[in-house]
Image (tube, rainbow, N blue to C red; front, side, top):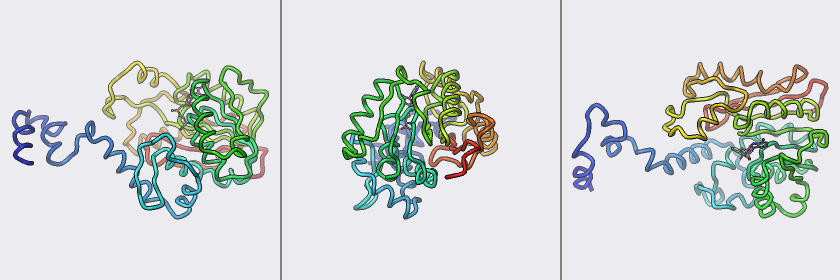
Length: 290
Ligand SMILES: C[S@@+](CC[C@H](N)C(=O)[O-])C[C@H]1O[C@@H](n2cnc3c(N)ncnc32)[C@H](O)[C@@H]1O
């Protein structure tokens, strides 16, 4: 094997850059571009290993998690898991006390529906679950959730396209927004915050705390990355791996996502595994429950 490696990897290199995707990929550090799956699966393994018994027991209660063939790992005979449902369990544990009390949820930008799947599977007190999203994504969510949920739980979901969303028609206990307000235009986020302020009692946000340069994480700059940098309500650049800069950005996040001065932040925390995300739960001040 090493004869081959020596012939190929060590024939030509620049000693000033050999540790940057050069022959050092055969000595110490795997090339993240070719071994990305190994890096991701290792993150999954660390995440599932560090979950406590309660988190694992909730995870096992969500059926059909592997539908759609996600990139997953088999941790033991009972647990096969992908990143989406690790995130889901972390988010739902953060919200557990609140979710055990409320009866209705509106989710803005629900994606394919992993959060709805988790919440409806674990919290029987939820009687209505509204998902507001763009039409093509909403169709995907409808298909996914119909497949993974039993009929009685699927019936609780109302799918609302962004075009037909009328903020006055929905009044719910809890509004959830995960990994999406940072990708919407600032004016759209502000409209949603106005809606939450008027029509909801609790608000959960789990989003990035600012912007980072694509080069920091080895991304190519694309049209999409340029748009991502302009969107959302937090535009400042920061080093996502600097604790000091992250903490400063987290403080700004907590202020920016507060729907109005009548809201209080009940709890906030970092999000595993991503360092550039933060999560917070707010409550409208007049509420006493949850
Ligand atoms: C990165 S995905 C995250 C999906 C999901 N929250 C999750 O974490 O799995 C962003 C979501 O926001 C939705 N979205 C984008 N613009 C939106 C808008 N104006 N109103 C509602 N949803 C929107 C997208 O369609 C997508 O479902």
